[in-house]
Picture: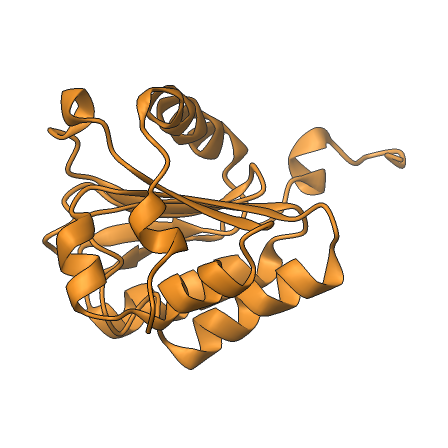
Amino acid sequence: MLTEGQNLQEQKPANTRRVLSSKDEVLKAMVEVARLAKRSITIMTLDLETNLYDHPHFLDAVKHLCLSRSYARIRVLITNPRRTLRDANRFVYLGRRLSSFIEFRNIHEHYASHHEAFMIADDSAIVFRSDSDRWDGIADTHEPIMSRHYLNIFDEIWAASPSSHEFRHLRL
């Protein structure tokens, strides 16, 4: 509720966007965004980068979401699944154990030209890198417009992409 003299700008959260330029900054932002999730985490990645998606703090945030919310949903699109399977990523193992919450899909070849990598919590917080081969990017804990834009792109690719049976039956 607004009091006299207040305007809508004062109700909006302070600027939460920050620029990322290193692996450590990306990891810290990913853990922060994952911890904010109340319903869902959406991930588009080249290959589930080792030391990001299998980092213990990230895995703890994902486990907490899945085990504390029966309706939690984590969707992951992977461009290069062979590399992910070769690296024996712990996030893949977690996805196998929590398969009713976590689903992996291989990006359909029609969309293989997408080189961005991002993670979105619910429909508001985002970590985004325009080039998955670089650490440069942004993170924002309250960016619903940008988050929805990339969720729409993700949903289009998700609908066209096959489910990844390799990740379901992996024996690590």
